Length: 267
Ligand SMILES: Cc1cc2nc3c(=O)[nH]c(=O)nc-3n(C[C@H](O)[C@H](O)[C@H](O)COP(=O)(O)OP(=O)(O)OC[C@H]3O[C@@H](n4cnc5c(N)ncnc54)[C@H](O)[C@@H]3O)c2cc1C
Image 1 (cartoon, helix red, strand yellow):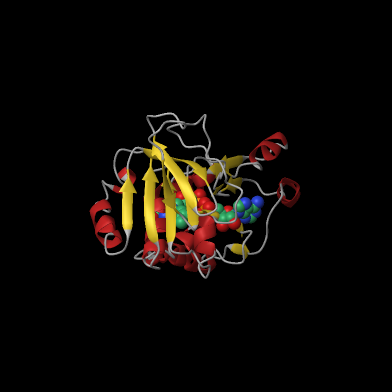
Image 2 (cartoon, rainbow, N blue to C red; image 1 turned 120 degrees about the horizontal axis):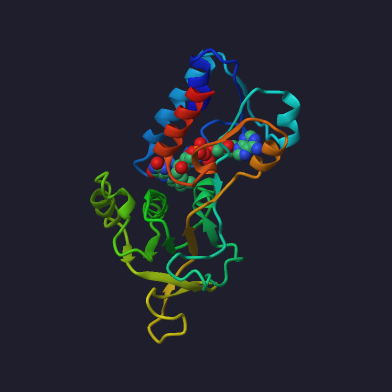
């Protein structure tokens, strides 16, 4: 939306295609977390602006490479986002993916927020492999529903990616109002029907220091896989194409906005 807005401001005829019925991408999920509703302010403003500027918005329109080449657009900006990997790989121990992922109570953060009416049970494990706000949001979403959360992270500190934004302490304060346990330098080893086997990152999975944590729900937050399948066929078809935001490298909103802005200014 930021790329479309800036390109339209500069006088281009712009079409924006969105696979879903509503604009906003992953922010539609992120804004459902406790205290995060105002994340939607920016997407709401962008949506108003692109309509005001006359961008042709095609909702519920998933574009394939062939459809894009058929349109004959002069330039294409791919802001197709990213998808949770759910392969159980944790960066601390990449050769030992978590076992038992295929069970219905194992969710991505996208599943968690998209299925808000679901019964998450009494206890949950959130596995944070990124150290950013996404896993914090998942934990808080569960804690505010009365679920006891064990937060398992390979990292030495809680959510270091948002420490500089001064978000860590307030989040911990809110989480401590419910049942919340943080285990640093830990990883999930195997997911069972009602519990998760966890252990320290610095010991092998077969060590005698593993233990079991009750979990009716397990949420995995790892670095996403970029959605960039359209890139290669478009390049091969000779279409000038730019890749931005999570589709380039999965990160966060500010990076996506910056790259959208630069792409809109560069066409
Ligand atoms: C639960 C959660 C919490 C988060 N919390 C934060 C946070 O607190 N702070 C922060 O900065 N970031 C947060 N993020 C990350 C942030 O939402 C993303 O980094 C950001 O939305 C990336 O923007 P994007 O435009 O690159 O991709 P997206 O927001 O993923 O948008 C991509 C869009 O492209 C559409 N699309 C894909 N393929 C096609 C196609 N072929 N045709 C048409 N449309 C297509 C998709 O439907 C989607 O709407 C969070 C993410 C999640 C899931």
